Length: 173
Image (cartoon, rainbow, N blue to C red; front, side):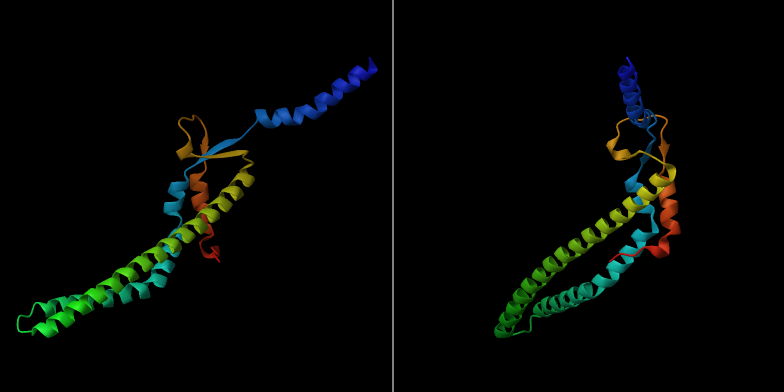
């Protein structure tokens, strides 16, 4: 009988903390898309990308202007056949080069944007973890993955406020 009480007491002591953790779960929701659009770090990253890609855009723009001027020159009816053929060949050649450069720069731009997007999302997840630990939340769910939920705290604004406070501390390597 003594052993029975000891075993029962041991089982109760071991299971009570687990049961309490499950019955007192703190669930909060968050809107990651809203955070992504409103944090100042996104604007910083966008401006940084625009600076990096500006030179590429200028090269393409210059080539485009050159191509258009040759097309305009081709419309001149006073040109000889030989000069016309030469200009046509140049136009075809430059057009092919321009298309290749546009394709290359577009691919490069997409890769840079994806990398930047990933860095911002990692930053957002770090902020979410900070807020969750501060508030002792056990579960944080994104609004996009929930069909219906009632009476649950939304910490989206808290994360946006924290991101705004850390605007100058946004270090991306």
